[in-house]
Amino acid sequence: MLSIVLPVYNEEENIVRAYEAIRDVLVPKDIAFELVFVNDGSKDHSFDVIKKLSQEVRDAKILGLSFSRNFGKEAAIFTGLSHATGDVCAVMDCDLQHPPETLLEMYAMWQEGFEIIEGVKHSRGKESFVYKTFAKLFYKLISKSTGIEMYRSSDFKMLDRKVVDEYVKLSERNIFFRALSSWLGFKSAVVEFDVKERNAGTTKWSIKSLVRYAIGSITSFTTAPMQLITFSGVVFFIFAIILGIQSVVKWATGHALEGFTTVILLLLITGSLIMISLGIIGYYLARIYEEIKGRPRSIVREIVKSPK
Ligand code: UDP
Ligand code: MG
Image 1 (cartoon, protein in one colour):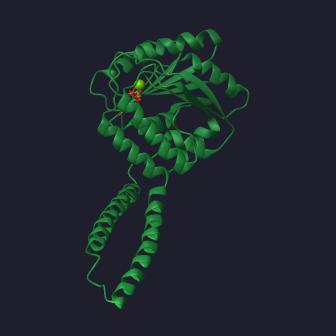
Image 2 (image 1 turned 180 degrees about the horizontal axis):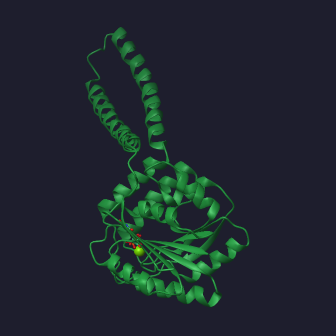
Image 3 (image 1 turned 90 degrees about the vertical axis):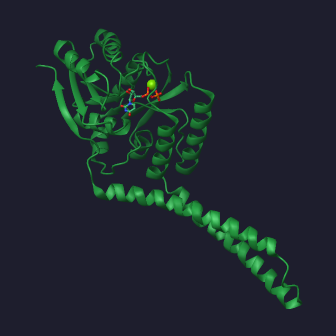
């Protein structure tokens, strides 16, 4: 059986349509499937729609989980995967931006023996200029620091049972699904898809949440920024030695009062660098603090299942 995990946040218009689109693709091919809707603290009637769907649908298993509040898409994916029961699990967006037809392609590759099949964006669809630039910059940064190509990657993936079992064993609270599946290893393949336009509703990301997501995922996945601090520290130390020698020479030759500009510049530069570095360390500290609290990733308030 194929499980499909769909994170849901204020998607009441899209849930039934997502089910229908997936059904129309999978039923003709005789692929038994289960839909795992994870309601991530929606403020609309999404969960009522899921409940109703779970009671009405006969040609698929429907599992609906509802969080006690909005925990974020990553938490929704994780919790969805840990409740999925299929031999193979897919994760896709509920707004039909990930085309269900691609599921067939992925499924065929899974049957061929691949364990992670990643959906890769062939085109990114309609996005604003600012968003596009920001996304590009962010993924360049991550790709450089982790060595994983990220710009075209997405959360649209199909994972074998083995991979899911390993994934849900990971104990860190702040997980970055896109990058982690490549960290896990396994036999993986790539499938290209075109990002469709959003079916209904609006994107759930604000600039603020995107910046938070970017910083969060960088700090959870790489310590490169901290290494950058060390590196610039070393550069400055070399710089300081040269300047130190120069001032000693000046002092010895009797030109000591000169060089106030250098002093001021140095103060400013080192001051700001120290502040930036402290900020970066602060982010990692916050990460450690969050992890060490050991809180659950999400709290499931309610579960609905389709009747057997
Ligand atoms: N989503 C979620 N929790 C959130 C934000 C989004 O579960 O806090 C879900 C949303 O319902 C959708 C998917 O994540 O199924 C992708 O969200 P969206 O379409 O807003 O993002 P975009 O496609 O613009 O990247
Ligand atoms: Mg979307």
